[in-house]
Amino acid sequence: MIILSWAVTSLKRQQYNMTMNLDGLTLAALTAELNQSIGGSRIQGIYHPRPSVITLELWAGREQRLLIEAEENPRVHLTSMRLVNPLQPSAFCMLLRKYLRNGVVMGVSQPALERIIDLRVRRGEEYVLRAELLGKQANVVLLRAGLVLGALKSEIGQRSFRPGEIYQAPPSQGKLDPRAMIQEEFVRRLSVAPSPLTPLPSEGEGNTGVRGPGLAQALLQIFDGIGPRLAKEIALRAGLDPAQPVAALTAEQHLAIWSATRQLFENALQHPSPCLYFDGDKPVDIAPLPLKLYEHLRYESRPSFSQALDELCPLQEHSVIQEKLELQRLVRQHLAKRRAALERVAQDLENSKDFERLRREGELLLAHLPELHKGMSAIELEDFDGTRRHIQLDPALDPVENAQRKFERYKKLKRAQEKLAERLEELRQELEYLESIESHLEHVESEADLREVREDLRAGGYLPREPARTEPSQALGPREFLIRGYRVLVGRSSRQNDELVRRAAREDYWLHARDRPGAHVIVKNPSQREIPREVLEQAAQLAAYYSKGRDAKKVSVSYTRVKYLRKGGRPGLVFVTQEEGTLLVTPKGEV
Image (cartoon, rainbow, N blue to C red; front, side, top):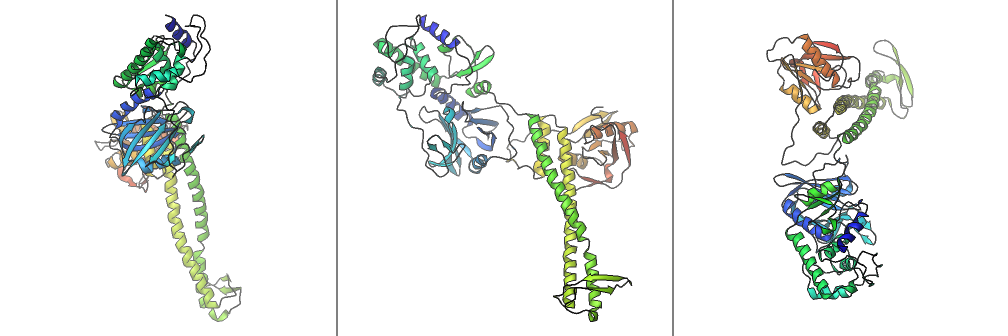
């Protein structure tokens, strides 16, 4: 009763702000679980969503996501969380992709009982992605044949992780491995444990009157794979006070501690039972099996350590709003660049329109050669239409050379104008495409909507393409409405706009906000008859709502049959060869 009183009293005084206890024993059980879960998986994606977090997307008949966090409370486990990835991957992320993407996880292991987890990956050669879960000194290191290829943190304390250096493992502390220890060695170590003197326990808490190293503290220095929590747990399982001085232990108590340690490790490794502990409704810790230390807390079993860790330390999950804002910022940056480029090209095009004057001047010079001589800087000649034309000359050139110079500049400017006109049209189409994406982003409401817009941006080259997935993502169809028996489809993205027009029948009706980026709206017309005006008006309200005119009081909407459309250069762009009418409507997102 004294011991249990100590445990409950002491632990109730703790403020449960801890997030996890990933000691060597818990990590050993977690490593075995991961080895079974992801061994043989292919790495199909690598991301660096936060400075201290790496995620690997794995495929082995189903998709799984491995999270590696190298913060003050580091961890490695499978997760159901989706984090927002930055638009531009970090240098370390690109390094991992270079060596590990499309590689196969050959196994997951733990050196001895260290707080280290290794992912062995084969991609031609064998690589090791090592997660050092060492509290504030946590790190993620990519190794090949003992050499560092790169690391999340290039330097921690006295240890360096620069590319090309020989990897130096954390120094060994010379502790016993409880899985292979000999009883005699354990008793000897316990007898000479070099622990500092501990204060006498308070009255009523196992005060024996004997000073010396505390039992839990001594166990920490003897055994590998345990932390303060399990050191106290071993003492409690042996029926002893964790603070009891080692010098007061009897031979029978030595044997009880030995047996408790062996039993704890055997049960945790051979028959793990992931437990999630709660203080009230708040999860406060995990353990590889039920603990006497936490008898005053409620616990629930979980099917895996990964699930328990996911619940214990949730990161902010994928935020649609957050990514929507990031994508809007990206699109606006590209819009600003393209508008500036369009202005420059338009000015260059305007300046190049003088090319016909140069041709005319060259012809005039050849026609009036007898009146010209070298050294002249200008001359006024009668043009072919009877007017007088002032022509600038280069005094260093003779008359024929001056005429040739005019023709050369004429040809150069003519070619430039053709290219500038092409470039101007490309920029206009690109601006229209980006403005359309910007409009679609304003109407994003879900992850599926975001996926459609991301695909638009990838198709346009504004986002890097993702590696091909073995399992296709669930496609999201267009928005669909029913107006007086007529099916009305509204595109969610530029690609979907393209698809709607491509699949539409010639007599289906197409609607779009006039002179504004927005969604294509298709009214299906299987009877090929004239569609009632009230149906077109409601469809036009949808077209106005799903456009940049969403907040306007009135929006003009064009409509025509699909047979009067021609495909544009970029996804979602069309040319209207015959507009059949316009409607001035109030934007509405419902019918």
